[in-house]
Length: 149
Image 1 (cartoon, rainbow, N blue to C red):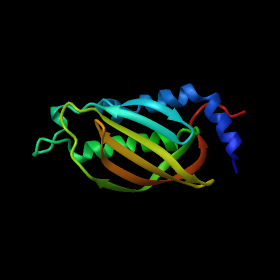
Image 2 (image 1 turned 90 degrees about the horizontal axis):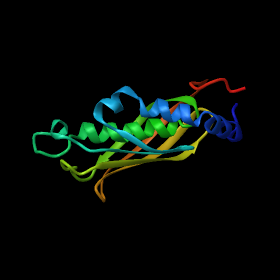
Image 3 (image 1 turned 135 degrees about the vertical axis):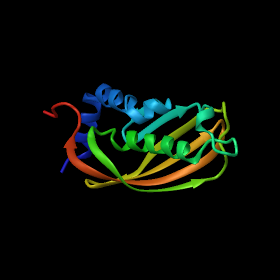
């Protein structure tokens, strides 16, 4: 079992590689998401929606909001350099996002053990909280970054 100190050492040693992988995630890049912060078990990102990201009511489509929440969830849970895959998510949509208002999302690790991790995600449009997500990952033992020595 990998201890927290070992995971922290992997994170620090391979930080640039982890950030690069998360910043260049194809779907996130396609949507224009920008990773703005990555720490141990935490992440933040932003996205400025364009007219192609709106629903029939002229507000930001829920799929876009979910995608941004999922993006920071993935970044935070994979910040240790070991593969973590989503198991469950529960999203609450509270208010609409608007065209031209930058969406920001944060993910914070609530708890983890050697196999599972739980995260709280918040999405804002401007300063308004528009969605929350509770999410859980399965933590694989394989590293996706360089040799752990």
